[in-house]
Image (cartoon, rainbow, N blue to C red; front, side, top):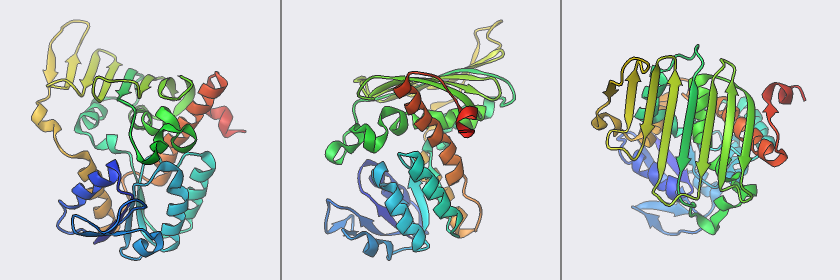
Length: 317
């Protein structure tokens, strides 16, 4: 199966490495506006339309504000699409892309890669979705570096909420179900944010996202449900721990670190390719990704207007 990668920044490089591990996939081209020649023997195209003609599958790794235009062209040419998150940076673009997909026969999958991290999968498997939980999810890093630093411009990237915290917003939806209420606070540059989500099942999720952290990238989770506490810190040697019956005992069950080393980007792309090859539904649909993106966009609105937002009311307006 031939694939073209659109965009060759940080995530495009990661996706190329994942495809190169697949014996049944050939990366037929890379679209770039800044590079020329070849990358690891793969031809680089500076013309988008020419690049799209090289394969039946496209992997969109371009800046978020470019997603709508490129997505529209790929759908019009009948290409199956892997779309890196976030799907888009405005509600209008998201709805347009949903309409385009619904009118086509192409398969579209969105890269909400946290669902493929073994640690988060095991957290999900240990959570009872019918019971309320209290959770703290945190994601911190230095300021991202990108071409022309587009990701630091909120109008292009959505800032730390849409670009970084969307990972945890999506995990919260996946683990605890639909969100009914949001309250968000952010600094003026949108480099740091705090969110509180209320879920339909009674769960409360608190989220922290920061681009002001110089201690090395870290993702953390702390989930309390009845008599169990699940903790995860990506910087720990044994990052995931499950504490059973915490009211009566301090014993814990530790998951060996060797189990946590699968490449999540390979896993998500492998499932996408298999869905196309076997004509099966993709694991993370555009509509599913839209629900997470919509929560992030409403969190931005909450931060701007300094008020909580009810999703039920938003649906009715």
